[in-house]
Length: 257
Length: 111
Length: 156
Image (cartoon, rainbow over all chains, first blue to last red; front, side, top):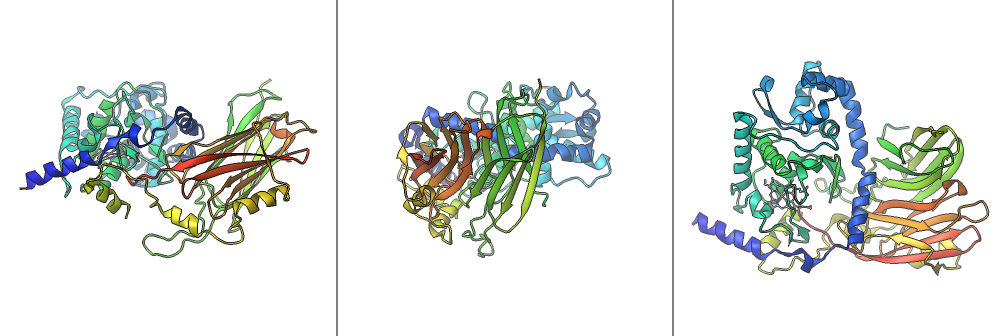
């Protein structure tokens, strides 16, 4: 019984989609204007703030490099490989969790993962890798392999009262079709590569958001129980989508509708 | 003066004396129109929007602006400026509640 | 509330995703009032001292034909001008013709700007014309107008 309902709902979902070109298509000139907005991204202010916070609480780029056991020169490429399994943590971690640990090591109370100060500092830390290609290695060890598998499962598993999964709206079959004026975005490197462009300024929210925070936004909209930031499932999702964006150049902060 | 976060950007980053450069001022400001209600409390959020902006370069006023509530939250103001020697560019703004803020950067032409 | 709309759409049999006017500031823009609420014509009269402004190809007004999001619409105005002491653009005014207060910003320039350009981002309550009025140092006024369609989504 439950199974049938799920199928019917996914069908109605497909029914309510239509192709972007039929709805409205953005002209090249429009697309160019929106691209130019990246030059003056309000999130540049937040990233600037994040740089000051990293200096104050983590000893700046040098402090972060030392904590990660790499030289400052190696830092950008190393950051481009996150999320990673780190022995000291005994788990796969995203960059913001590293910053929390470093704050705590330096005798400060760590910022909450969902605080705007952490978003700012995390965005700055990732921007150190701007221009580097994403180089996550999901075969590096069994821990990251497991994290990837958990992420893939979380992405594909239907949940919630609507029986939707991330895949329902982000599979290659529905990309580009329009759900209530929103073209469904491609989450792969060929298309859009969110992992390379988040943290980003979200224009509808007038604030800087992280990739995991964006996942929560989709969970909210699709009535999926919201998974906490930094949990194994969330880090897994980040690993999964970072693998999808592998080889794509990091450009932080992004600018999103 | 407040500690409101803001940023002045000059493009290109490196420029010569006499060059015309792009100047952007960005600030985190709610630009509240006074007509919006808080979703939870249902109370009207009081108006608070930037109403004037001034660009000063070495004490000389380059550009002034009268601003209304239709500008987006966290607004951006971009114009050009002719570099005319080493010095300081200051951006001052005030808002409808009387808050005043100033941000400045050094102007250092190369060659 | 946005979420409910979103799922109404999901469950709807109709395949067309309608352009929805439901966004908080749209209502807000309608209600805008107060000392600044000049209509478009009154605003142009106030700026030009009743002289009016002439359409000109010297004024390049750039706005998107379709705005992704009415809360953040990029606007750029560039005017052909030598920007010398004797011949320069004195001011660039940006107007949202259908917002209750049409005036968005007046930018007073000087020859020290070197180039007559101004860019910002505005809120639009709905589909409408965005206009610019430009005051030249010789006392004349130019104008340009462009329509912007505002489509608003409900996801996220």
